[in-house]
Length: 416
Image (cartoon, rainbow, N blue to C red; front, side):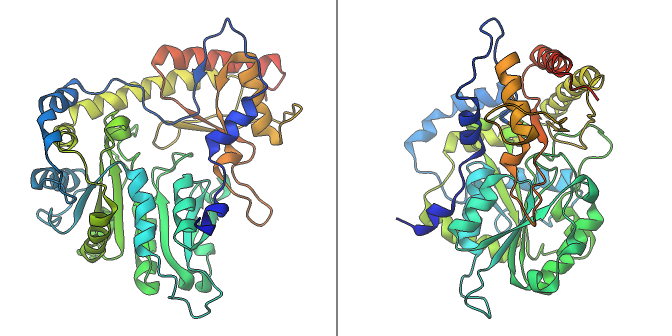
């Protein structure tokens, strides 16, 4: 067995299942899950039709690099969405389709981490990541033989990593940094200027920026979409996207989590080695999924409609919960990150666990304790005392969930 497997933490939803194990929610209340970021809006019919019409592709082995037409479509989407210069993205050199960003975010660490590249061989390479975070970042770092370095994102830091607080020795040991913008679980967006600050640091210290942008199309102001890493790089003269990779997916943008379709784009030299790795990895996207992906990336109308649905749900939920708890809309994404009041129940540790357990037990609603998404650093767990709500259910379910949560807060005298 790989000894590094022992370093992996239990996944958040394993911990959540244990927390709920001895609960007995009311049978009269339908369960409403708000814990998992799995989109529930209908998949676009034209994408489903593209899958159905191209099932004959199952008879052929797909190319690891994907069909040229898919890479060209992705390049066109990137150029339009992030205001890139025409022809600055080469579909042959800068883009690789992947089976969802989750597997690619894990795989890239296995490619990039050089365990021998440390002056002190007792020091493992560092992989920096926000804290709270998507647990794949941590697992990828550990199984690549690196050491995770957690950057606390709190209200005091604007829910973003504070790059100014990181010392030179840490940057020198850093080989890779994971970003998530808009962030999971906070929905915070990293400004262009901050991205450019990080790009300059990456060039100085020779580390790679891995920007997870899978929530980039879920925002509220149509006139101000979140900035992207490639956009920031090109604007500062980094036209080769040196040390920069972005990861995008159709899961959230197009309500297609089961299609397992996304892409990686950026620095051509890194992409060449990633492609080499993937030819051995056996992870080529099925042909009919590629053709369906072309249809999805080529259409924006369904994405705009998707944002409209989330806007409506956020407005309804915030109007209901705002009467009893301090809550506000995120900059983007489909999560609410809520600081919960002081609360205790037997068998739960901390306000967030207690709140989540009792809410399920009394109202049959599942939310995720924030501490499950973060690690303690210097005595602080920035996720503790928070819960994450994924507003992925249909509007009426979200409305019902908000009413039940408000009732739960009032019944337990938790209103502030």
